[in-house]
Length: 433
Image 1 (cartoon, rainbow, N blue to C red):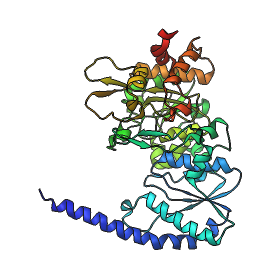
Image 2: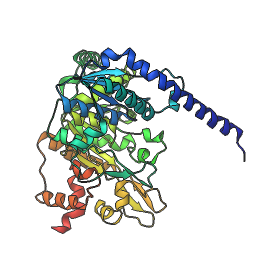
Image 3: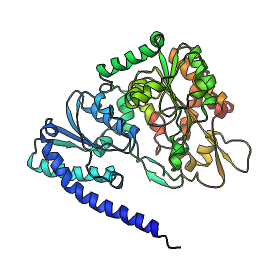
């Protein structure tokens, strides 16, 4: 049936796109001209534009560490939900932030702006050869530790797509190159004072930060909603364990804190976060000793500061964190015709596509969330390793070797060198030895 309303909507989108593109062709060179003293303050120039908090944060940290302590002029094209305090955390990056005046910003994505900027900057550098544009793809390739190109499942959960090669960032953190990002002291002291005012005893103990991802409910792509956390009530035993182990606990991001409110040792900071969400979210992620959450952008912040990350309910199996000491509890797959979930080893051996995040959106497979007991056992291991009290099974290195033998060198996890918790390894490989 002919849909006039839809046709008009699509036509307006196209018109806005073409007008926006033409607008940018004039707006960007004028921006470069207006901000030329800041842009060309340093000999090195870098351009960053990404579609998520995690990719943006890692991009900043990547280039900051490589060139530290040299100063770099960084032209930043922020995405829709950027954290405005993020540029403050990298002292050797001089930021020049571009936000278009075009009214229909959603119609022109950051990739188009990025490419227009690159074109004009390259033209300028023809006449200013003393300056150098650091290409994002070039530095990723230069530091890569991958044997071959990395791939992953498409956001639709069906196809494959080439993956950005972030293995160089693994190398930067493993070798502790450069310096970690840090909130400027004036902002840190502001947060400290506000927290002390509301909770005088908060800093009597170190704190753990919990972020239970649920934004996949608002995003329709498979690769987003498959990483959602279970309901917060499933984390109550783990929160209690963190507190019993000597930590105060806060939650940030989209975490549903209601089930935690009556737990002594859990601090509800939601009022503080509402007053300045960008700053307090960043503060709690940067200053927590332990992070508990899912495979999503925020875990990169504590990773970058070498803090312990405990990742639960991760999916697909292709990703780790950027610290090999972190443990990761992955979700399970189950064939619909069977009652028992598949072991990870069975998935790697017989359904490698699923491990990459491809061919999952079919009628024969279900995703099974981790249980509250599995989450607790993972948290116990992560906390005890952090405290130095964990006693490993004598066979754990053999199990790790077995696990690593299953991985493809086309997946990032092969280079991240993370492992599941020991009870998962034991379930898969104890019969081998």
